[in-house]
Amino acid sequence: MEKSRSELGQIIIGVARDPLGLMGLIIVGVIVFCAIFAYWIVPYDPIAMDIKSRLQGPSAAHLLGTDQLGRDTFSRVIAGGQVALKVALPAVFGAMAIGLTLGMIAGYGPKWLDNLLMLFFDTIRSFPTVMFALAVVALIGPSLQTVVFVVMATSIPTYGRVARTQTLTLRNSEFILAERSMGASMARILGVHMLPNIIGVLAVLAAMDIPTVIALEAGLSFLGLGVKPPTPSWGALLKDGYSLIRQTPWLVVGGGLPIILATLGFTFLGESLRDVVDPKLRKQR
Amino acid sequence: MTDTLLEIDHLSVDYETGRGDLKALRDITFDVNKGEIVGIVGESGCGKSTLISSILRLTAPNTRFREGEIRFKGQDLLQSSERHMRELRGADISIVFQDPMQTHNPVLTIGQQMLDIQHRSKQSKPDKLAHAAKMLGAVGIPDPEARLKQYPHEFSGGMRQRIAIAMALMSEPDLLIADEPTTALDATLEVQIIERLQELQREFHCAILFISHHLGVIAELCERVVVMYAGAVVESGEVREIFHNPKHPYTRRLIECDPGHIKERARVLPTIPGEVPDLANLPGGCIFRDRCDQAMARCATEVPPLDQLKEGHHAACWLNHEEVTT
Image 1 (cartoon, chains in turn brown, orange):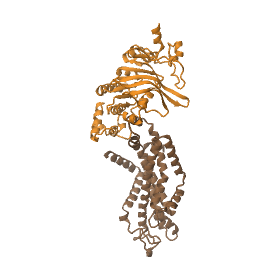
Image 2 (tube, chains in turn brown, green):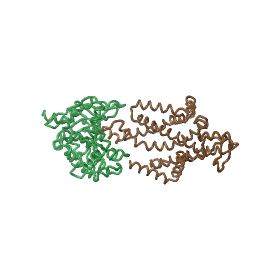
Image 3 (cartoon, each protein chain N blue to C red):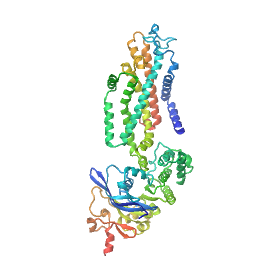
Image 4 (cartoon, chains in turn purple, green):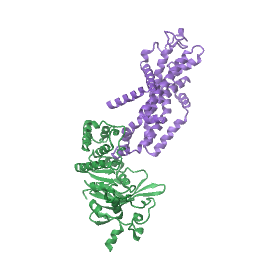
């Protein structure tokens, strides 16, 4: 356990040495910090209305002004970050876990199972994400869980395919043959020997995927397919701001800026992580 | 018969390919006794690797066992369940592979890997680690406790091969298959590994099936030797007998070609002219006929059987029959 911690430490040091990586690390750190401690940071209840002070510009009392219902935009941005991570993290890690399992089975198992799983992956991939989301929302209604489900379902094939390819390259390597000749079962080979070889690549993929998911959540909320109205979300802020842009530009800024920052931060982090975890990829770039 | 550990009995193995069946092994018969070191020699492509993977039943999907039996402690491995095979592998039969740079998982420490292969044992983790350290010590890795925390890339090739041997011997198997364990190493290391194997064999009393194309190593290590050519056994017997009195032209030529046997300086190393026949389209008669300088009319029509010439010496060549008849 100590060993793996020091490895994690080495990876973080490696990322921090890269200027872009350091920037990503700081942005992601701030977003995660704000999301975790949102309850203590927000100056106002993000869903408390105050009609008298509606559509205000930035002031000492309201850092980013207020919206059409007098809600504090800054509080809603912070709370929206929490929602964004609540969607992104479970969706990405859920998709990674399922995709990894299915992908490894596809890569290591019999040919017919591989074909079946690949058909399944390709079927999912053939749906445009937003269309798929529309259908699911129409079916079970908009909510946080719906967004998580849609995002997870649409990104499983990406992880599955990568895990499958990695497994296929590893399955004929000599050390796997050596493990088989030592009497290791399929579960042992996949879990103990393949997994540590594959997980690094998938972790990088996940880090690069988080901004996509955040943008997707914002997009769905913007279309009214995401989280339900009183819940603050960056996409919902953007949607409100879009219709009120003549009255106040601060809603659009409050919704748009964090999306841009989060996307940039996670992308920087992901790219830097990729270079640190796999030096071979850096040369190809 | 009680001291026979492994019996290979008229084994024939084909690979199904687009060009038809590739007859990788034909009518292989030999035994390995308990605690004995048997060598298998033959050039590349003679079926050595197919033989090993058949014994472990870790064959490619297009492998077809056409005939014969592989009996381990009297039980036919070709009829055993997959589960039974898995129980045998790494417990009663283990293997050391050719290339030590490839046989360890690059992302796990040696200690983690040695713990993992003891998954059958009910011992506690510290006991298993102690056992792993003891085994590393036995193969001559200095400071084994500290070395357990290192990754494979932190070891040299010779050390990795010794670790592979330690792993293979960890469960005290009855049969150790060594698939050209010294081919990827240099000559000095080769001697070290061979000596270590000999010591360990005395200590653990396991039988070793030693595959090599290095005759010197076979002569040094083995008691008996099986000479294979193009998927068939051409000669088998005690090492001394085979090396001093080879009865098959292939064996004779092989010994002549061994650099250790060359007395005079030559510009070109001696070779056996000709090529191995196409296994998918075997010619009739003796398989070595085209390359044999003593081929006769009979060799083109009839396949010479593997006959016992004297106690413990078999060869498949019509020349030996001529001697008997004339």
